[in-house]
Image 1 (cartoon, rainbow, N blue to C red):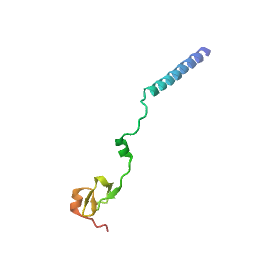
Image 2 (spheres, one colour):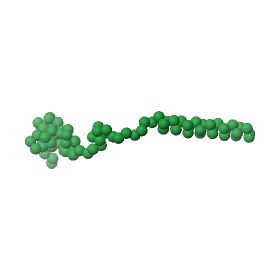
Image 3 (cartoon, rainbow, N blue to C red):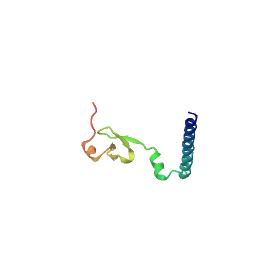
Image 4 (cartoon, one colour):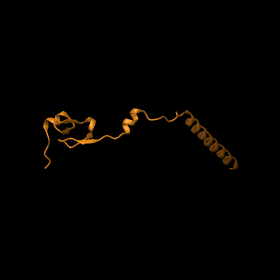
Length: 86
């Protein structure tokens, strides 16, 4: 029984050491963090949201169409006009 516990402890210890060495090797292979690029900054910067005058969906101002002082999500909704909300 004593020999079995001894070999079990050796086995678990070797697995533990192997895992520690693998984690350290993975940290060395990982590239250092870099400053965010312009594209990353654009993705994280906020933009004003506007509402479509027909369907009411909210979308970024850069994707909306501004026609006759109203914002639209698509040219089709601009042709349909403002929908009355009763």
